[in-house]
Amino acid sequence: MLLFYMGKDDLCDVIAQKTEAHGVDTDRIIPCGALPQADHLDRIAQVDLCLDCFSYNAHTTASDALWAGVPILTLAGKQFAARVASSILSAAHLPDLSVKSEELFIDKAVSLAKNPDEMMRIKHHLREQRFALPLFDTEAWTRDFENALHQIYHETQSAAGS
Image (cartoon, rainbow, N blue to C red; front, top):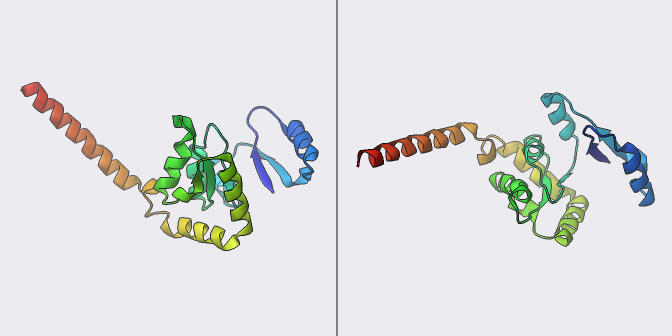
């Protein structure tokens, strides 16, 4: 089953044509719209694996998927927008879910689909470590950011007094 986010444009007919052309039952494609945050996270939690798009990677969607306990597979690119999900996966201690080629992306997706034990290991990691992962440690991030601001302020004051 594939959940497919529909923005302002209704692409259901186009997606149905494409899926039918590739022999995929259109009933397995579920178009989704915007939901309140809690409902959105509940919906994502029903997914086995989130496949990131390229060349503009998931940003908030990657964080939401991981928070909901769902692994996300991404293809890292050269520009910033194509590396965000890789950074997010690194902060979630899941760098192996970021690959460097389309071939590796397909291989990894197929491997994960065929290996439920590995999928469960990753989901277990996300559930058990969610509050310990740097990605979701808001208090540590805030503390580090505040410390950096204090340091910058003191350094600029010292430089101004020189």
